[in-house]
Image (cartoon, one colour):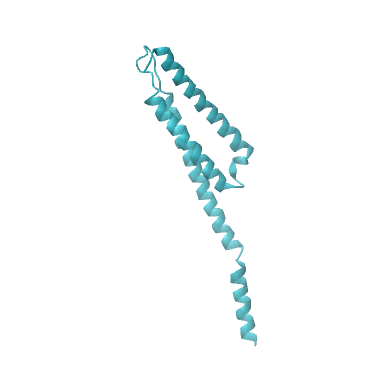
Length: 127
């Protein structure tokens, strides 16, 4: 790339973007109660944020890594990838919770069509 200062500036810029993304995810998910009331939205949110975080981590470890700068040790990209994977896993957990909630609702609240069919069957037997 260019000189060491330019490489470090680019690297530090993406580190700042990554930190702002983390702050944004924490604040947004907290303001929505951890997406417990709307798990489908949480799944989309965490999967999208997780993929973006992992891509930033890959960039920090490859293209943006200022390897020719003396004394630079850049392991932050690994941490970024791990955080992104945690977010994707959190999205999968919400997807599982959403599926469980839907199954419980289907068992606990019979659909109108099944209720109508049993009522119609009773009426037909009476006549």
